[in-house]
Image 1 (cartoon, helix red, strand yellow):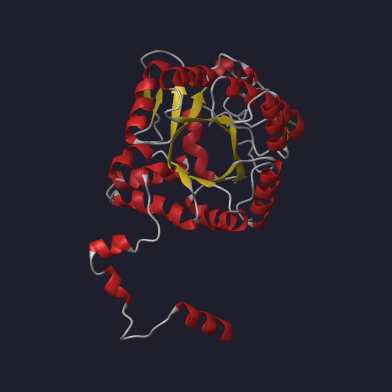
Image 2 (tube, rainbow, N blue to C red):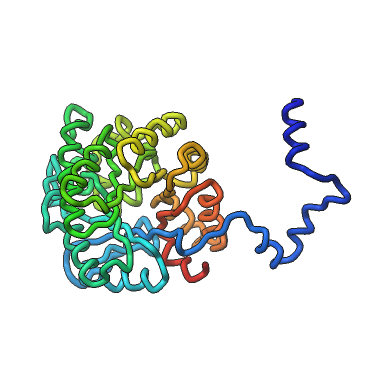
Length: 338
């Protein structure tokens, strides 16, 4: 108790009535002046779902206001993001069922949907906006898992071999930031070594180092077409939501292996993890406000449970916890307000 009192004396340098903390909050200009954390368009990463075909803009039913776009409509979406000042987009494919199999071979097709999208964007926009690509097999497997699934588990080392090849293919297609989301042990080092040996030293790795086995991912799996395919769960490789120290070990390993940035996923229920990672490692930390978070907020706004100000409040909480940027489906919807 004496320690707490000493700490409070250090923090509070005056006393009431001479000290009135409300004085600084009285006027809007003053509140702006002393604001500790501010959200800007530079903090936003826009996820985009893409689909094969032509002239397609298909709503994702579980995510109001979110669509899958065919490549002939993709450029206009990217141009809008550039016009808004959004620094980076994240591409996610809806893979046709006929292209899926147990080992996700479509991920290694140099002409798959993601590779074609990367080449198209780079040809049109050069380096006006960054491109982030997901490195994992779940969009391409018939069982919905992030790797080679055998005996009710994912084979770690065999999966990494495919992830390395997938990374090189995406890098050669123009991807700027590779984001391994698979949660296999040791994959960051293998990918970094392969990139460096193949003259991709400038390609960044944004590691999903602290990715939890969460119930918030349902709408995303709907968006990429894997929701009804998943056999079992992903608890043998994604993290237990009861753990926090384990996240620090995961992050430390990925930094040692060459990760340039770190993702914490999901976002809002894991603000403590974002803060711990930032305080311990001083590395760029990206929060992922996942599909379930987006859908809950959007549905609540539509039903007038909340007003739309909750979007900015929620996104600012990521900044307050220490995040450098946020992957959010609200990016293009709130950029003009920032």
